[in-house]
Length: 308
Image (cartoon, rainbow, N blue to C red; front, top):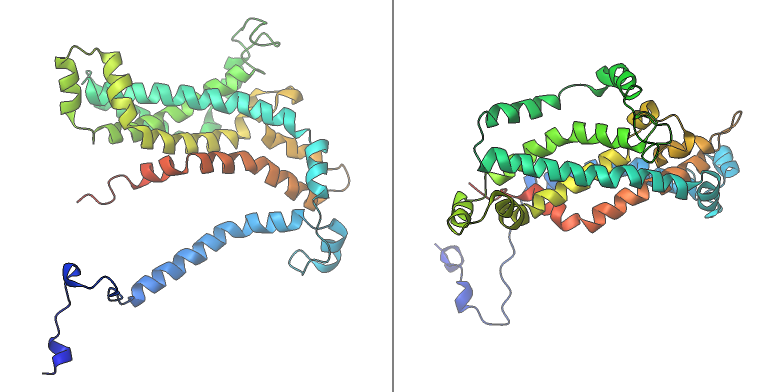
């Protein structure tokens, strides 16, 4: 045997400061995996990139040369037109009025319910968790007509709704989002809270902490990654909703921003480049929220990935 064949790798402690560690051999399977992930990412990004590309080009140019042609002229004119013609600020405000309270109420209720199920050992807790989980399997389209009829029969004070009904009010849309999203959040948070050692809450009980203090000062701070991930998902889902607002709101000035794109469609002609600019503007708040909560989102998704 040669000396090269019997050479033993030098431990890290014995290496000189200027020595470089030996490079690891790249496995073919890893190369294939990364190539596949890159292709999937490009597949997801392709519609977004095409929309941005189309929104920067005049419609006459794309009509003549096609959407995938090399650009002759780029402009931001469509963004200013979409912002003004679709009355984006007003509809942005409508979406935020619906999405922010719905997300906050959903996370509060779901976290407290998950705390009660996993930490307080209430009777029938597992059955309650199964019911919350099973509720996510119910198609929302099945409830359209019953909810429409019910909301038209529930009165509200004029100070809460100018229609004096739960129908055609922000409250009705917020309520339905909270009802549908709480089950999923309870399922996720209950599984997350089971990973928190029970000794923490038991020690808090020995120190005289009540239920509310255990929830607010001990369990809730430890659930920050899961809450951040759920806040990102819930805001995206509720903000992008079109169905419930269309069914439960009849006044155009109360519609969310997802319906504002209809203002950019003409009766006889639709400029799809202008529509693409409006779609990009509508998607910007979700990108901002994801960027803001990116660390919590990744931490919530990767928790336990390295556990055996």
